Image (tube, rainbow, N blue to C red):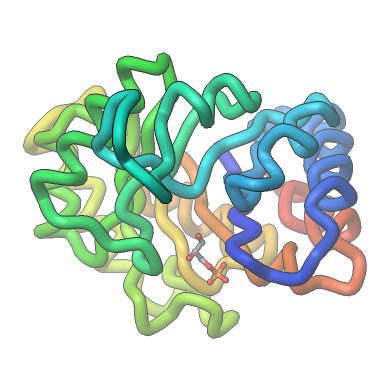
Length: 214
Ligand SMILES: O=C[C@H](O)COP(=O)(O)O
């Protein structure tokens, strides 16, 4: 399983969490990575953890003030990027452009979507993976893999119907090892999570519990 920890803009120490993700990754068969804010990518990547961006824009070098250029994110140390996270929604054309920009910079891509229908559309854009996240469950601690298993199974089916090479992750409310196992049982190849680790008093302990059954 792939466990991608999104730090969003939570007031955690990104380097401390990154070091915990790195150490737990080294002690498990699961693949763990972290997605810090853009301003923290370089410091996080220096810990040796697999580092992802939270977003890139559908742009090239040029006059794009305030945008996130895929090449700059890669230069800072990211190896992949989320696109169209529920908290950073894009228009369809911009999702397509962001996937292309990420590929140009050799970044792995995960396109997020709200539901299985959107997952099918996202898979058609040719990302490496898609992630289904019902917005109503994000940050609630109620795991999508248990509260809404149909959405995960239907997302897996929707992606496979379009392109069987596109992996499917799920996210929202996932905070325990049982939640991750349930996601895998529904056909997800990974999970996207945030508050369960970024808001934990002891992120390393939270991560150890997450991967313990894997
Ligand atoms: O990117 C992560 C997802 O939005 C899930 O967030 P959460 O684990 O806090 O529910």
